[in-house]
Length: 372
Image 1 (cartoon, rainbow, N blue to C red):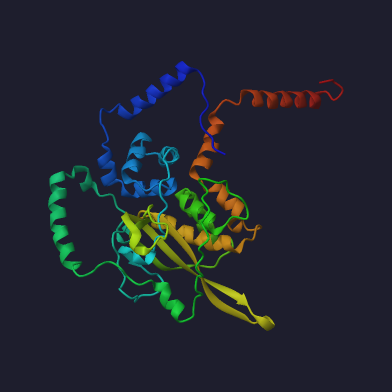
Image 2: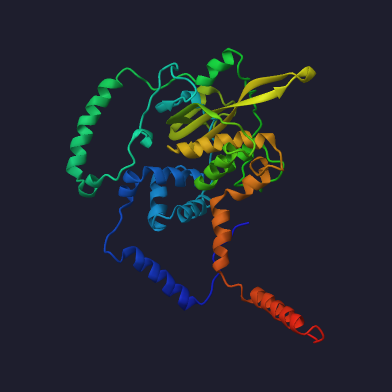
């Protein structure tokens, strides 16, 4: 169910929209869409993920129109997405083909290909940088020129493709293989969610979920709602190539596919120790994993998604974070924000009915013999 604003008095609404335009422009400054795209990478990645639409430029436009409100920007981008025709389906992307920009493991110090810190605020001091207030484009150009020279020398012979950490655990038999499932995935943007939900539906809703809500519920999982402490087996940020089949050939041979571009994603494989009861009451410790993947560099969201993916697999409805209806119905930003916001809309008739009931109850309490 989607909630949107209802129409009231035409004149009042028009003046309200003008006032909103005034508030955006009252300082006489125009925020350029290109500047948003260049300088608000984290917000753009969040909006693209929650909107299920990969377009940095349109995400920047939505952020400008929403005046930086991420929930409103997601609403705008989802609404636009719903108007677009779906001309092609891509081939299943292969994360192992990712050209890695950042790749770390909290489980192993030494991993094949090494730890690549990449771009992250994890290693910085959280102090305001007042130099940014006077930053100029000339300073930026000079810094970029010097950095690119260093970057080219260091990365000259590295193509960015690295082996997966979990593959080495599988070779040792320490983690189970994932069977290939060629079932066509469900699409929650085209068909309503039903329960029990398929894994494709769960993953799609988790990656579209509001970042704060997904993070909050994953934090609840770690604090005791159904899971022991998980460990990041591998976190990757990088570009994955996307291919589509030629519409002129139904055989879908590999050589007949077309490369249409890359998408930047964050992928997380989370290791979770679980105790399994064997025959004769014997207990054995095993490793299982949860999975998370989001558009852009969206690390906290992807980690939280992998935790909830594993938590929902257990399916104990008495534990909120394992109850798929509780989790999947409450993390969607448009649904939740819309429902909360609709409380601002007129509820005159229903409230007056409740008010009359309160008055009648008061009169009956004051004089039990009085007819109400």
